[in-house]
Image (tube, rainbow, N blue to C red; front, side, top):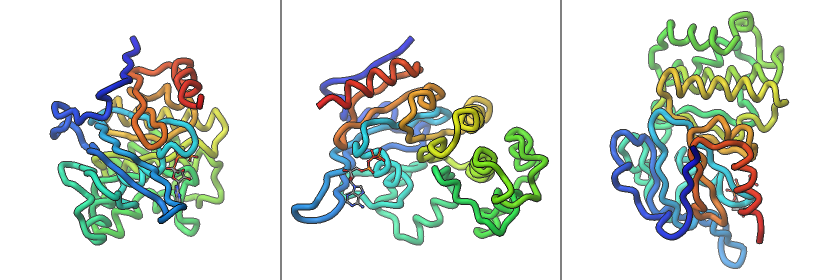
Length: 261
Ligand SMILES: Nc1ncnc2c1ncn2[C@@H]1O[C@H](COP(=O)(O)OP(=O)(O)OP(=O)(O)O)[C@@H](O)[C@H]1O
């Protein structure tokens, strides 16, 4: 059954959910791009929780602040005010050096454009983050990921020898291999045909269901959102409700409502 939340109080901090079972949350997050008359308030007081062991989709009309929110969660953009708490630490207070370390240890990333290193093999791409940070690789977990993502025959290939869907599955394995506190996925199926996209979404879903991974995924696609446990909607930099166990048709309908002036 779908649960919906809209209306007054939706931006209120939900203290019961802000504990160790919540790997990421934000409180009253604001972010402005640009200065003076050209300034754009991309986030305007976003208080949101992203649960452990859940796939949370973030959706909303173009320009509603989805990417800015994801970048703030990743520590790639610094908010004007508010908190971003990752694994119990307010990352808005960290130095660049501490942020770099947090990103490599606690976060996994999947981008629309795959972002694989062209000179490395599939196997090397999957573990490059751990090698660079000097942390050991768990070989049985790495091999399980390679097998479950259908990449066994491809481990010695370079990215240019793979299809887009295969490249994105390599990116998913890279994001999961160090068992991060949360995987942040920015339009992970945006460059894929629907069948390849489904495989990537299946992989993210399995990581959540079988291994308790936490995933936050920005998407425009109601079908992709249908893989999520919950969808948070943004409009004009503010939370604009949520849907639990979202069916694509219900997501589409909500998006249509949000896009109306
Ligand atoms: N670097 C920037 N400089 C100025 N304005 C920016 C910058 N980045 C984003 N914005 C503006 O901030 C607002 C939110 O942008 P953001 O990219 O977060 O939205 P979005 O929901 O991800 O959009 P889309 O779905 O089109 O990718 C938009 O009005 C956008 O034009």
